Image 1: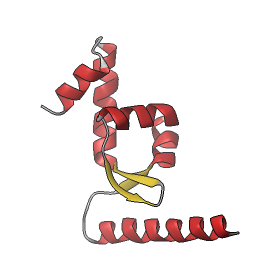
Image 2 (image 1 turned 120 degrees about the vertical axis):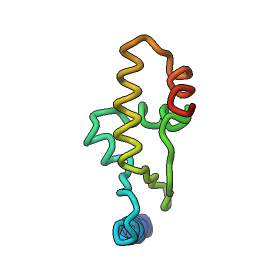
Image 3 (image 1 turned 180 degrees about the horizontal axis):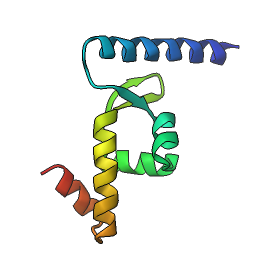
Image 4 (image 1 turned 60 degrees about the vertical axis):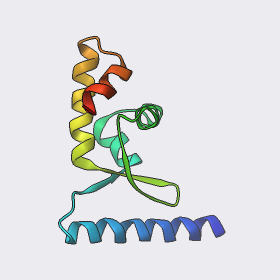
Length: 98
């Protein structure tokens, strides 16, 4: 029961934060499960890309990570393109960050 209450509270807070950012004109935020569903990548891949520095968490509520949707979209397209050209993920990180 306690986990259910904690989950409900963290979900509510996440929706409030995302809603506030939308009202403030900030970029839309997207959670890990939304990224996995929308961009058809595995949870392990998302974690690996995040740990390597290819994707950046902009906010964290409880154990839910939130990413900037426009950055995710741009970086995943760029990562896939560079992987197809034979770049390693470490070189891709250098390309993405200058």
